[in-house]
Image (cartoon, rainbow, N blue to C red; front, side, top):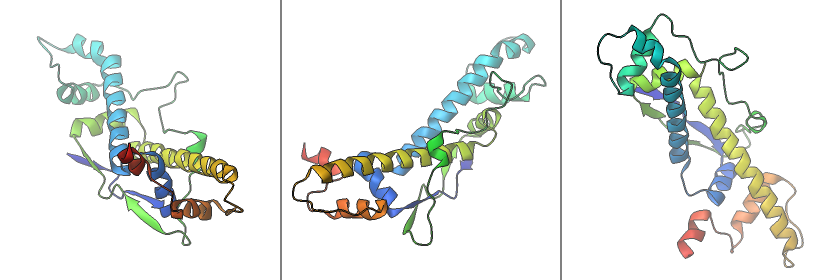
Length: 198
């Protein structure tokens, strides 16, 4: 077994509020599911791209189990990391929103999520490292992109609701203050609280 992202991720309290406003999954659950998706993609791609080469070198029967196939394929002299069409190795998830991710500053109240990271099988770690140059950076980018998207949606929705609310005369211009303002309102409910009422 291997541990990935053992340091967890730092998020501000307001980013955590944005998360809770939209998602029923905890950050730990969501990140584990994203990691499973990365493992699935890496494993299936490696097997799809290299199984025939592996079979051509095998004598007799071969295993149908990825925990046997992945280490065997990666151990072949011919094996090379997955390349994109332009010949570059997959490096990271590089969407614009993940580049704009916020980091916790001294002024922010920060919390750590995904403490202790995630345990994965040895063959899963091999597959990830053969498919991505740095799988921890990719997972971190996925996570912070999700935070950025939820924060943006929370702010946009809150701006509209507050401007449409005739009882509201003013609201904070600073986005962190806006999130705190909305979450402190007596009528505010998280996604989980909304779903519980239904």
